[in-house]
Length: 431
Image (cartoon, rainbow, N blue to C red; front, side, top):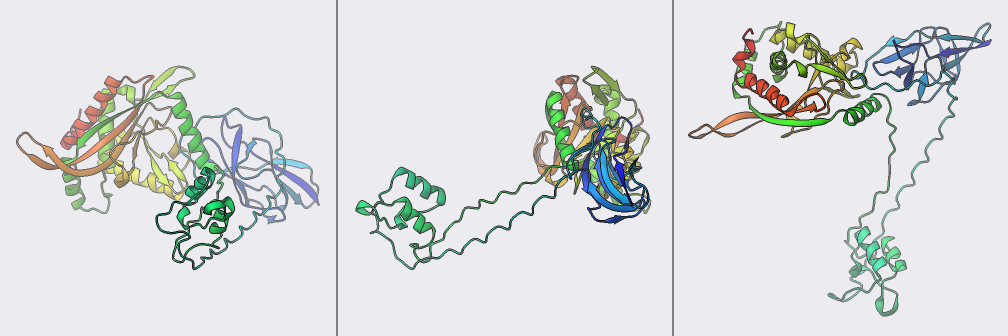
């Protein structure tokens, strides 16, 4: 028998390190060739690492949440025959997080120290039941209890009425010992409710996609000069059109939501404001204005927020936009979205649907320079010159990078989208 060291392979072009997000094996376990050993996450994708050989796991090269350099020891196997050979497994791409989180400097490819098993957390001792003594009020009604400020503060923090605590000090003064006895239930009147402070603290390690989201959001807020613009939009006519189109059910057409209409409005608006459909490289201080409109659709999944990308929206019709957005959102929620489907957006739309609130301040999907936020629709009275009439209204809460987008142009861009949505027939007019 010999020892074979499996190293972390090169999991992508330009990737120097990866975060270990899941182990599929444990020490002492027998593994087969091509059996998945671990899953690692890079800036662009989650990748599964299979074993190139069969053997028995004798050591793991890190714990979940640790960062490994490409070439660092991942797993040590006991294999038949001669050992002492170092090999790199072939990665397999799995579900990926949202595009373009900031990269971090690569660490030198040195093996990560093998972790020692964490001791199992000691079970919490059960809380002793509170015993309430069947005693009446410890002093006559209306008599003010005597106690020091420290005792009064403790009682207030514990939710205890000092009038119910018998004092053992001079002139019935309530001491700390009296308060302790009361809290233990030795002198509590029948029927009183004792409130017990909950001192439990749960520590949750931030790893995987949640860590990437945190890094991306912090980097975006740190680098981009955010400013937000909120405008209300009358979507009454659009909702009537949407209901009419959805009533004509066809097997080859998906149900229309607001999203494909908004995507079409964005396509038309960026034709007039190309600076919105751009990426800003703040290191090189250059702006890439894209002709193709690649819209990222922020999607909430069980693992966290992902942004699948509907590519070349300028070349897609209404139902094609709806079908592609639906397909990508479902793939992201099921964990099947590929790296290519989660990268390359040039502008993003984010929506919380019915939970959208009145207004929001979305964070730019850096290096993009604009993000369109959709809030919930509400029916409210709107003045129409001679009377109030019920209209379906919705706010667009959008954020822009003030380093490259002026407030005036941002407002005009949103006003252009507003005009298209409020007169939805214009969405289908050829330029």
